[in-house]
Image 1: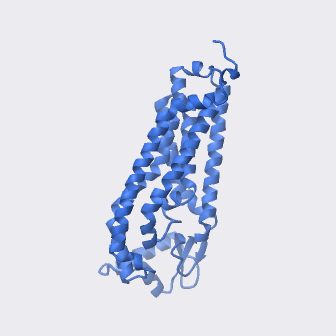
Image 2: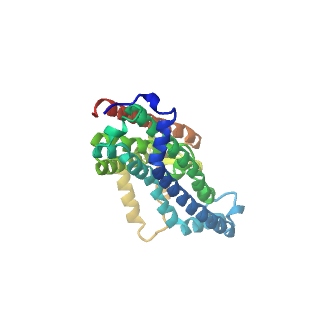
Amino acid sequence: MTTLPSSALPRFGPAWVAWRQHRFALGGTALLFAGLAGLLLLGGLDARDTYTQLGLDKCASFKSGTRCDQASVTFTSQYSTANLLLIFLLVLPAAIGAFLGGPLISRELETGTFRYAWTQGAGRTRWLVTKLALIIAGLVALSAAFAPAYKYWNAPFEHALPGRFGGYLPFEFDGLVFPAQTVLGFAIGVFLGVLFRRVLVGIGASFLVTFGLIMATVFLLRPHYMPARTTLGKIGSDDWGIGTSYLNPSGRPVSSADSHLLFVRFQAENLNRPNALFRDWLTARHYQIVTHYQPAGRFWTFQFIETGWMLALAAVLVAATVWMVRRRIA
């Protein structure tokens, strides 16, 4: 088949064709975000009404045992199921990457239509880069526009129970991370789709890889972007406590095994005291509790670190995809 010169297409020809080809996928993604945003806004209105009825809008602090503390417990308990269901939002980047990125090129490779599509007045590199740039721009815009809906829902809970730094969803949606996760999920989907050249395999593999990477980031990697600080006192309400350790009465660190034995001993001695606290029990025996934490002032530093490495990895995967399409696919 004779390849037409690139001048056969107008300057924005590939962009227009890519938009026509993928407008329904982007439209479906937009509808998904719009539907979720609508639910969050409706839930946020209900939560704000309850928040006002409980008088939480007049609370300046939530010290233990006070009316405001009891009201905040009532408030968060009333919406605990809704907040638990919202963990589903952590799946969004993996789902979007799998179903939007996985089939993007692999469908053409699996059916063989790439031999026709990539010879219509523009080289395969131009077609691919145009597709990727258009969809990535759309995903960034949609994911960034979705974040305020979650912030609206979460605002009353953030006041009653501060913790956006250590909270899984507030960290994602209060900064730059969610758009970066979405772009990375899409890049993984496209890369694995081209690598395996099968639609279903690309979709399944990209979902598992992206979701696994996000979970590993949230629970294993994120707390350790910077060395944690330690204190023998209480941390601030906006600080992120990531662990505790103990010092024995002589000031030496207690091993993990000994810490477990101490807790077993505490439970055995307080079988009939359900309100007993391990912290108080240790203090009475002259043990010191060391809290490891990330200060609230590092929130944006962590945001830039996570966003940076995710976008860098996405760029590497996009470059690898372009290389495979140019060099390995005939």
